[in-house]
Amino acid sequence: MDRQNSQAGQETLKSSEAPKALISVWNKDGIAEFARALAGAGYEIVSSSNTAKHLRDNGLEVTEVAVLTGVPSILGGRVKTLHPTIMGGILARRGNAEDEEARREYGIPLIDIVVSSLYPFEETARGNPTKEELIEKIDIGGVSLIRAAAKNYADVTVVADEADYRTVMDALASGGISETLRKDLAIKAFRLTALYDATICEALTDALGAPEREEGREAEKVIPLRVTQALRYGENPYQKAALFMPTLSGPVFKQHSGKELSYNNLLDLDTLLKGQAIFKGVTSCVIVKHTTPCGVAEASDALSAYERALASDPVSAFGGIVGFTEKVDKTLALRLAEHFYEIVAAPEFDTDAIEFLKAKKPNLRLLEITGRYNPREQVTANRAGFLVQRETLPPLPAQAEGRWEGAPRSDLWGDLLFAFKAASLAKSNAIVLAKDLATVGIGGGFTNRVDAAEYAIRQAGDKARGAVLASDAFFPFPDTVELAAKAGVAAIIQPGGSLKDADVARRAKELGLSMFVGGPRTFRH
Image (cartoon, rainbow, N blue to C red):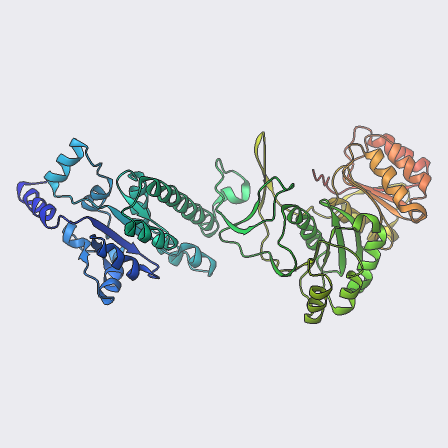
């Protein structure tokens, strides 16, 4: 800086000894009241552009940023506050000799409070914007102001959320802003800017067609999450829990009645939502208990689908959750009210069905599924770290892409495909017996496939005769095939891939069983 500019800086520094509050906000709600409180506490209000106009229109005196910097807003408003005078006034360490010398030399006044809210990038991204519109809503100056103030929390107060206006106003009225409050606001500010940047990353990855998204090449994972609902408790009452959603995703459901949801309710709901997705396009019912289905059925109407799913295992259905791919009407509601369930979920409810269930079962949660969220990835946190995998429904097997061992039973293909879908929902190891598009036995969550088969066959009883059997993974030995033949199972579907595939196929043929080998493994742990 030359001597003339240095002298001008000295005059700027001397122009006002009052503490300064820099205000630059997109959201103007409540800002005039807050600025008035700051002015009443002795702060000089510094602002620019639309914020300055808004404050002046509300009767406040405002010092333009350009008065301090000597540079007007430029580049169509892209650059207003990004200037050494502003950033230096925020970042200067009080009591630091080197910083104080620089301030005196360049005429940099201290800024004690920074109030900033960011361009509405998230709202813009939700509205199907053009790429240019999206980019123009990426805030640069606001993020820089917030981060600078938060970094220097020891001397500067940052207010990045209008919800904190009242807290700061109360602190000023009570004698001043404490260091504890400045620390809390700084941490919140960093969290808000991190979420903001993560949301930008997510939206631009889609808008710009980054190859990492489709090919899974990311070296880092950025997931912008916001809490949407507090939950009653976690898996157990001593654990706290909450539901978070990605910032750019809409709600999955609308709750019409019942108690607040618990963590376990939403674990079960995940299985049910996968069931609704895999049976999309047909009238079906899935009953879930402890994250695994205990009854699945297709039918011509929702009531019939429910009756057939319930018949699969009425004991386990007690206290479970029930989901439909079709509307729940009053007739179905009357039948549902005869049993104890935690949740009934469907894409639609008749009004009289809602009113009846609310009166008859006030604790029953009725969830209208909006179907707006289809996760690209499944993220599981455990004591080894975070596991991330692509979240997709299993591709369905096709007769042309597999092989029949024994006599082909294309007449049973509908049941085999249905059983495959049901097995893909069950916890591994999983075995499903089905007949006429309804499960008659489900063995899920067993540590070996033989036990899973024995349980499913015992549950099916006489209905096992003529049923089909689906396995979520290959048979390592012929023992499950032998159990199926003994129970009278007519056909089997399994993905194959065992070292003993030939032994298993040979034994199936010896026992007169038709077995289709094809389709993917569908483990669910």
